[in-house]
Image (cartoon, rainbow, N blue to C red; front, side, top):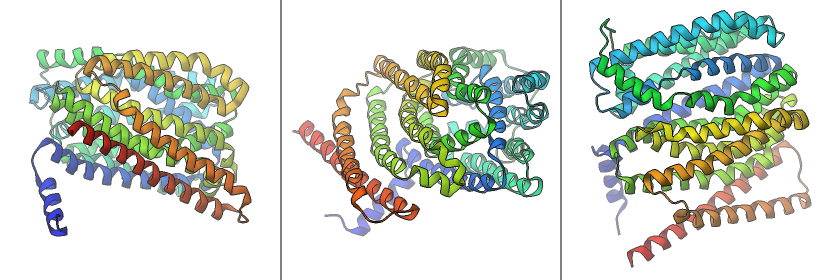
Length: 494
């Protein structure tokens, strides 16, 4: 039996190792620390700002950010992904060409936004949108001008530097937004803070990852970049139609206050999902790129990551169902409790989206982002077809129900794509996860039956009861899944 000292020595050797897995382990620690820090600051910012600003401010800002996403993604060329997956991505000619393509694209996009901002304001009957868009969306220029050498550090799995750059600028922007809110007490604090976050990112990228653009552009490098861009053309825009159509439609059919409550509630559901998506993608994208066509290891890694996501989901869902109203009203104020129903559905969507995102990472790392296009196109089409009637009949809840249907269909399509590429078969792994889900669901059912008979009530009891039930579900389901996994390993070894 290993002593405690032996185990500590093993961990030290593992962390200090130079192999791919060890790099991913060390990098994951840095990215996790940075992402958690940034999410904590943003979470605290939202709690504070909902006390200082009216829900209408968040509703109007949601429209501004959706317009930004629409224009940005419509011309997405995947500079970061192209540098990471290309064997020549670290060469000077390649990153110089990447910078020019990115910068020129950002100038064109901002010019279009500046020109069309008054028409957007007329459409939403809000004259303030013109100036808000022109200021907040300076972020597009700053993002397009950042140093592409930063992406080379990510390609080389130098996650420490990337974490400092990415999350340091995020935290700086968050702090600036908070300071501006106390000073201005209006929506302009959100708009200026959003642009300032990307300004900090741009400047910091040149400080940490020095780069000086040259006037000469390599045709070969530019050709490689454009070929990769051709594979992802339209992908981000289609993804936007899925993820932002709800804001566009709700902004037209509901009040700014309802949209603000909806935005804050669904954003809360996306906090853990965004953390997991960004953290895993930044680790797994370079890792899968190094593995190339070693599909056995890729499938094994994908199965393990999916199992982790599945184990964490059910307890999170139980916690939200039992404590959602208390959580929203306690964090943001009583008006935001109205977002409970969309909040619950948003948790379901977040789980499927994170699981689906891991398949997408494999496709991008293989240099075949076009395989992801069918999934995104179908999700966008389903969302476009369902969103208006869903919002018309069920309001803000309908928006999330339409998104849930779309993401379920998209995930099914994506499973077919990964099976064709790597031979991954979820049926080989799904049984033990289904058992874990069933066990967690039983714990949840018993908690729901027992709750009315308890004499305690109130927000504090709701939080304690929800947390305890979720923790119990996590422990029991994790135990069952790991036991089933160990059983399968023993059978395979025999």
